[in-house]
Length: 158
Image: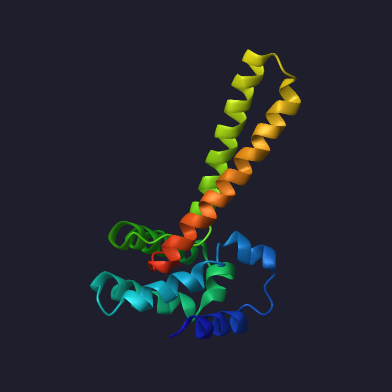
Protein backbone atom coordinates (compact mmCIF):
# COMPACT_ATOMS: atom_id res chain seq x y z
CA UNK A 1 0.00 0.00 0.00
CA UNK A 2 1.47 3.35 -0.98
CA UNK A 3 1.09 6.50 1.08
CA UNK A 4 -1.72 7.90 -1.10
CA UNK A 5 -3.73 4.69 -0.64
CA UNK A 6 -3.29 4.94 3.13
CA UNK A 7 -4.44 8.58 3.11
CA UNK A 8 -7.45 7.68 0.96
CA UNK A 9 -8.44 4.74 3.18
CA UNK A 10 -8.12 6.83 6.34
CA UNK A 11 -9.92 9.85 4.86
CA UNK A 12 -12.86 7.66 3.85
CA UNK A 13 -13.18 6.33 7.40
CA UNK A 14 -12.59 9.70 9.09
CA UNK A 15 -15.11 11.69 7.04
CA UNK A 16 -17.30 12.55 10.04
CA UNK A 17 -14.50 13.05 12.56
CA UNK A 18 -13.34 16.55 13.51
CA UNK A 19 -9.75 17.69 12.88
CA UNK A 20 -9.32 18.26 16.62
CA UNK A 21 -10.06 14.59 17.35
CA UNK A 22 -7.66 13.50 14.61
CA UNK A 23 -4.90 15.71 16.04
CA UNK A 24 -5.62 14.54 19.58
CA UNK A 25 -5.11 10.92 18.47
CA UNK A 26 -1.82 11.85 16.70
CA UNK A 27 -3.05 10.46 13.39
CA UNK A 28 -1.30 13.07 11.24
CA UNK A 29 1.99 11.15 11.08
CA UNK A 30 0.35 7.71 11.01
CA UNK A 31 0.17 7.36 7.19
CA UNK A 32 3.86 8.31 6.88
CA UNK A 33 4.72 5.80 9.61
CA UNK A 34 2.89 2.99 7.80
CA UNK A 35 4.52 3.96 4.50
CA UNK A 36 7.98 3.87 6.14
CA UNK A 37 7.26 0.43 7.60
CA UNK A 38 6.05 -0.87 4.26
CA UNK A 39 9.12 0.40 2.38
CA UNK A 40 11.43 -1.32 4.87
CA UNK A 41 9.36 -4.51 5.23
CA UNK A 42 11.24 -6.28 2.42
CA UNK A 43 14.58 -6.20 4.23
CA UNK A 44 13.45 -6.06 7.89
CA UNK A 45 11.31 -8.76 9.54
CA UNK A 46 10.29 -6.47 12.41
CA UNK A 47 9.08 -3.79 9.96
CA UNK A 48 7.11 -6.45 8.12
CA UNK A 49 5.50 -7.65 11.36
CA UNK A 50 4.69 -4.07 12.41
CA UNK A 51 3.27 -3.32 8.97
CA UNK A 52 1.05 -6.40 9.13
CA UNK A 53 -0.09 -5.42 12.64
CA UNK A 54 -0.93 -1.93 11.36
CA UNK A 55 -3.58 -3.37 9.04
CA UNK A 56 -6.03 -3.94 11.89
CA UNK A 57 -5.76 -0.28 12.90
CA UNK A 58 -5.74 1.11 9.36
CA UNK A 59 -8.85 -0.87 8.42
CA UNK A 60 -10.75 0.20 11.55
CA UNK A 61 -9.32 3.59 12.51
CA UNK A 62 -12.70 4.89 13.71
CA UNK A 63 -12.60 2.34 16.55
CA UNK A 64 -9.32 3.89 17.67
CA UNK A 65 -11.06 7.24 18.07
CA UNK A 66 -14.56 6.22 19.09
CA UNK A 67 -14.08 2.68 20.43
CA UNK A 68 -13.10 1.43 23.84
CA UNK A 69 -10.07 2.77 25.66
CA UNK A 70 -8.30 -0.60 25.51
CA UNK A 71 -8.20 -0.60 21.70
CA UNK A 72 -6.92 2.97 21.68
CA UNK A 73 -4.22 2.07 24.21
CA UNK A 74 -3.16 -0.86 21.98
CA UNK A 75 -2.97 1.53 19.03
CA UNK A 76 -0.84 4.02 20.97
CA UNK A 77 1.49 1.23 22.11
CA UNK A 78 1.76 0.00 18.52
CA UNK A 79 2.62 3.48 17.25
CA UNK A 80 5.25 3.92 19.98
CA UNK A 81 6.79 0.52 19.18
CA UNK A 82 6.89 1.36 15.47
CA UNK A 83 8.46 4.80 16.09
CA UNK A 84 11.05 3.29 18.44
CA UNK A 85 11.89 0.50 16.00
CA UNK A 86 12.38 2.92 13.11
CA UNK A 87 14.49 5.19 15.32
CA UNK A 88 16.60 2.49 16.96
CA UNK A 89 17.10 0.06 14.08
CA UNK A 90 16.96 2.31 11.01
CA UNK A 91 17.95 5.71 12.52
CA UNK A 92 14.79 7.15 10.97
CA UNK A 93 12.88 10.11 12.43
CA UNK A 94 9.43 11.55 11.78
CA UNK A 95 9.37 14.72 9.73
CA UNK A 96 9.33 17.80 11.96
CA UNK A 97 10.78 16.22 15.10
CA UNK A 98 14.36 17.27 14.43
CA UNK A 99 13.17 20.72 13.37
CA UNK A 100 11.20 21.26 16.56
CA UNK A 101 14.09 20.09 18.75
CA UNK A 102 16.50 22.36 16.87
CA UNK A 103 14.20 25.37 17.29
CA UNK A 104 13.82 24.65 21.00
CA UNK A 105 17.59 24.38 21.49
CA UNK A 106 18.07 27.55 19.44
CA UNK A 107 15.58 29.41 21.62
CA UNK A 108 17.28 28.31 24.82
CA UNK A 109 20.80 29.07 23.59
CA UNK A 110 19.81 32.43 22.08
CA UNK A 111 17.98 33.54 25.20
CA UNK A 112 20.76 32.32 27.51
CA UNK A 113 23.47 34.11 25.55
CA UNK A 114 21.35 37.28 25.43
CA UNK A 115 20.69 37.23 29.19
CA UNK A 116 24.36 36.70 30.00
CA UNK A 117 25.44 39.39 27.54
CA UNK A 118 22.81 41.83 28.84
CA UNK A 119 24.00 41.27 32.39
CA UNK A 120 27.67 41.88 31.62
CA UNK A 121 27.09 44.72 29.15
CA UNK A 122 24.43 46.36 31.33
CA UNK A 123 21.89 46.48 28.47
CA UNK A 124 18.07 46.39 28.69
CA UNK A 125 17.33 42.72 29.39
CA UNK A 126 13.86 42.58 27.82
CA UNK A 127 14.87 43.96 24.43
CA UNK A 128 18.17 42.14 24.26
CA UNK A 129 16.56 38.92 25.54
CA UNK A 130 13.86 39.12 22.87
CA UNK A 131 16.48 39.72 20.20
CA UNK A 132 18.55 36.76 21.41
CA UNK A 133 15.46 34.57 21.50
CA UNK A 134 14.54 35.56 17.94
CA UNK A 135 18.05 34.95 16.63
CA UNK A 136 18.05 31.58 18.41
CA UNK A 137 14.72 30.60 16.84
CA UNK A 138 15.95 31.53 13.38
CA UNK A 139 19.27 29.72 13.82
CA UNK A 140 17.48 26.63 15.17
CA UNK A 141 14.96 26.67 12.34
CA UNK A 142 17.68 26.93 9.68
CA UNK A 143 19.74 24.21 11.36
CA UNK A 144 16.72 21.92 11.67
CA UNK A 145 15.67 22.44 8.05
CA UNK A 146 19.19 21.70 6.77
CA UNK A 147 19.49 18.59 8.92
CA UNK A 148 16.05 17.31 7.88
CA UNK A 149 16.87 17.93 4.22
CA UNK A 150 20.04 15.85 4.60
CA UNK A 151 18.11 13.07 6.38
CA UNK A 152 15.48 13.08 3.65
CA UNK A 153 18.18 12.58 1.00
CA UNK A 154 19.44 9.58 2.99
CA UNK A 155 15.86 8.20 3.33
CA UNK A 156 16.08 8.57 7.11
CA UNK A 157 13.00 10.78 7.44
CA UNK A 158 9.34 9.85 7.15
